[in-house]
Image (cartoon, rainbow, N blue to C red; front, top):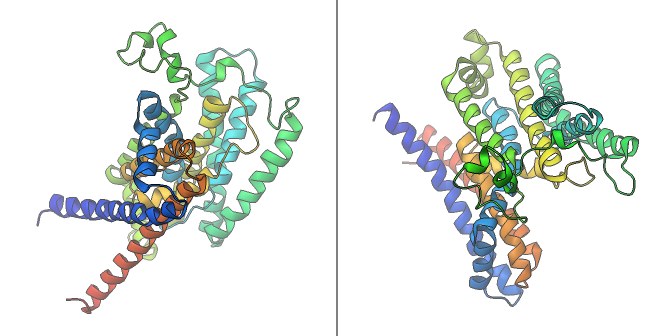
Length: 370
């Protein structure tokens, strides 16, 4: 079997596991829908219509998917290096807060400087917040799970408990509104843009209910860049080698400690970009509760995507569709908890099938399964 055929078979197997997990979760979800005395067919029809029923629904599904794709990538990348980044939530908050402060504090910068400045500031702060547990892991062997959990709590205290109160906007739990020059372009503004307004799709996005913005494009670009980094560069090879066997990588001349710090910094920057988008594109200020658990949901997205950058895009779209379609389910009288149950079932079955896959693989290696 050629190398390409082997890789293709591996990818198809991984995608098949994720698809099987989704199907099983939806089937089990029908039992819970029956308990609400509702029709599963009506419920899933509402879910589909809410997520993909018209152009506005599709655009908002993409909008809801954006932070999930980025936090999923922030979990998936370190996983390839054998690390479990539970700190995406804190990195999200720190990045979003930094972008928000830059967005409202600098009042006289032109847009072509202000917006990139705010994005870079958010990614840099998120990267530093991710790089810190990487440094502790590399230099002091502090487990990254413990370090990232602790830093999550510190990030919440610094941004929500202290930062918002320090910069508090009058009458609401948020920082002041960012300047227009720092705001990300929303897709429903394309029609009014002197250049982008000439695009064929510009008029389709011209609807006030559409909340999709520039960060979706940045999320897709980020996924492609990380795919290239992981599978087409020397650094990516080193990251994967460290994840496969840290001691063997060191023996082969790879600086495992450096790889750990670099991968955690990049991961934090990506999670920070998710927070940047919510501040500069969605809420236009840093708000209490704006994180909505994106950092933790990103773990599920990474699992669904089999920790592959392109797979993470698909995982993010799935959870974005569940979130957007869940609104239509609620309008149809289906409790919102049903969507949460389906999400939990997807995660459960993905994890279960992965455990079974590893178990069977070990059995085969020992000759226990013929």
